[in-house]
Amino acid sequence: MEVKVLDFNGKDTGRKVQLSDSVFAIEPNNHAVYLDVKQYLANQRQGTHKAKERAEVTGSTRKIKKQKGTGTARAGSIKNPLFKGGGTIFGPRPRSYSFKLNKSLKRLARKSAFSIKAKESNVIVLEDFNFEAPNTKNFINVLKALGLENKKSLFVLGESNKNVYLSSRNLKASNVVTSSELSTYAILNANNLVLLEGSLELIEENLSK
Image (tube, rainbow, N blue to C red; front, side):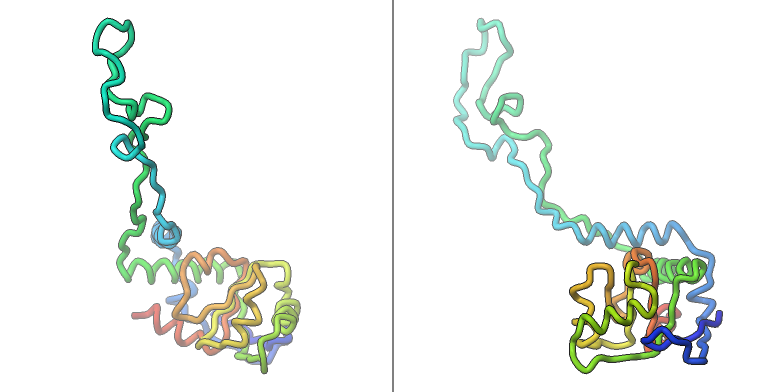
């Protein structure tokens, strides 16, 4: 598919680029997308939750009352989970929520995400640009020129650009990443995908392996 190239002022440069159909025009695999997003969110979890169990709560282990003759249930310890202040039954323990996915499935998920955005006409190709120094106002002007000031956007750079990244860092709705940092979650979480020209070849190269 052909997409026109814009400059950072939002104007048509008169040039067009050909986006690879094998990356931007496949039939999306929803299950692959689901698994990749699930893995991304699982990896964000710290897994440090912990509740004290019977053996860990403070309290004596002496038998608190005689076994028979009280008219109530027998009880052997004040740390019994049935008592107030007792241990938690099957409480949460520290654990890792991460799980493994094959590289081929993750590539399929990213290609599916790109194809979904392309089908919705939410992909913008922008010529490479840079700022002389980090300046949030300059980045906001780029967003306004592209009509993205009130939308969540993801800018994909071909290589790391410190000035562009720092200029966007204070803006919650905009995210700047390099082509090697892309994730299915980041692509789908943005309303619009802004691909700089320098990133196109790298994206297609990474996803065609």
